[in-house]
Amino acid sequence: MKLKVRVKPRVEEPVSIREEYIKLDSFLKLVNVVGTGGEAKLRIQDGEVSVNGEVCTMRGKKLREGDTVRMAGRVWRVTHGEEA
Image (cartoon, rainbow, N blue to C red; front, side, top):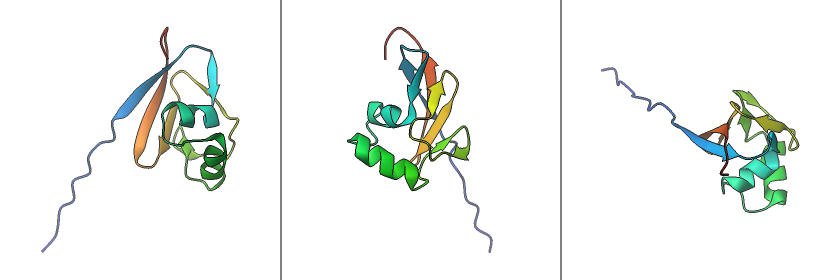
């Protein structure tokens, strides 16, 4: 007997920023997936975060409109707007 596994597509949560870019560690704090910059640094260095489908270990990575960030089973897409 074969089991069929249905994988739910990951829904990208839009996150609007006001500036041209936001650094990855600041972004993780903005979306409340980490509580402090120190926690963000450790999670990034441990390879728990991917940007645009690739693991990113640079906490100062500049995220711009259209970039996607994945961590802890969640996915966000950076958008640019008046309200952040």
